[in-house]
Image 1 (cartoon, rainbow, N blue to C red):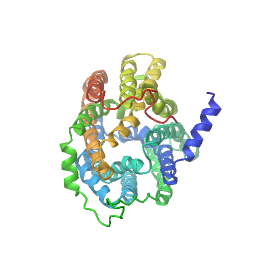
Image 2 (image 1 turned 180 degrees about the vertical axis):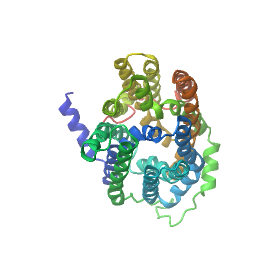
Image 3 (image 1 turned 45 degrees about the horizontal axis):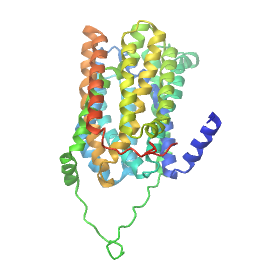
Image 4 (image 1 turned 45 degrees about the vertical axis):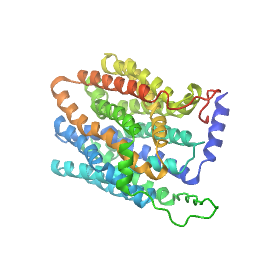
Length: 433
């Protein structure tokens, strides 16, 4: 199949999606482009302001700590008020919070608002996966999850590349010296301002009406008692499958939290890359990850189950993780950086899709909040511990710890779920994009 045919097939498949699903894909792309500069330069901005790595580690831990503490309540709130209002409220107050962080010079305010930003953004985060499940069906769910994740990553490619040029552009136009706190601050404020534009398509989203339930005589059921939020949580926590999902997700979250937030510092400190090179590097990494993610449903089809695909790609990423952490050659490290990100994240949309299939639709928000909680436990601890270790021992012990946590999680996923999904005789359990 040639490239033109593949693109045409992808486009036809995209057009079959619900209009609101396509709008959310647009929101995802816009957020990826506009907000990439924040992730690229925030760490450098904090250090350029005169704060040390221990403070940076604390800042990076407060946001996930808020998600950890408020994940389950926000998941319940999302189930109660609906996905659209949850997304709107979360996005508006998240952007306001981060704008304050970009403007203030007070360390106390940065710490406080980082936590508050995490609280309000939790409502957005816990609503995304259930929204995608609501806007899809079993025939196109893997495709929608994969294309959202893939295009989010590809859009970050564009955003990272453009953001890498912004400090130099601000220097040429406004006289801000590049690689300084002022130039980084200008980039952060620009990113936040542009991300406010995502509220326009978000307001246009319309959720599908639930199909009316019928009794045994074919009559419409006027009223049906549903489990309350507390009962939903109790039912989910009693489900052994949820705990089998929870534990490996926690380990992967902790492993990633040790390194991923600081990869920009790693490249700057070890290889002395400049702002433009850093932007290009992260852009290439996002390109590799995004392209790989788009093929994850096809790989699941080929192997017969999502679990096989997840274990294969994430297990393969471990070699490149060690290359990233220990090679002294920048070119080889770049290959390791791109391959690790592509392979590890290729399994992410499949794992999310698999997770949502384990419970009923009205429990998906609560389950998603439980899964986010497992992830954020690691991210609440990892960045702060990483900052302390970096100050004393550098990055090497962190890469070793990350590899061990990833490996044990991948082994658990295989032993827990290898027999969960049936393989069709054709080997194709999922629709191919």
